[in-house]
Length: 108
Image (cartoon, rainbow, N blue to C red; front, side, top):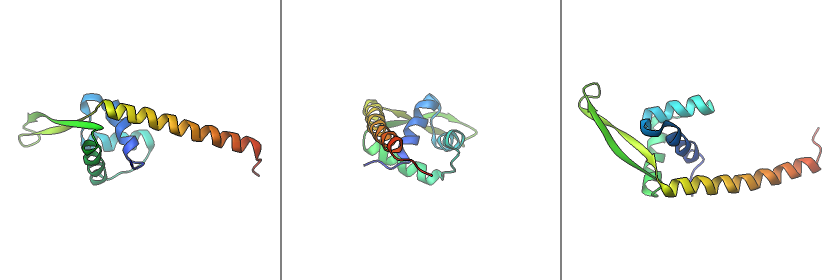
C-alpha cells in the first residue's frame, strides 16, 4: 500500500522529467501543492517506490559544485505509470460517489 505522499512524489518525478532529484522534488511539491515536506520523508518514499519497482534511479553527471558527486535522478517506470492510472480510476469513483451523496443531502 502506498502512502499519500507517494502519489505527489510520482507526479513530481513525471513533471520534473530528467531533473527529478531529491531537493527538486521537495521544491516541486511545495510549489505545486503548497505543502512543506522534509527531504528525509521524500527519500524514504523514494526508496519505497524504488523497492516496489515503480521508479528507478541513476546517478547523473559528476560536478565540482557537488564535490565530485552526481545527483541521483529518478524516473517513473511502466508499473509506476500504471499505478498512477489505477489510482486515478479509483479516486474518480470515490469522487463520483461523494458528488452523488452531496447532491442528495443539503448541508447548511
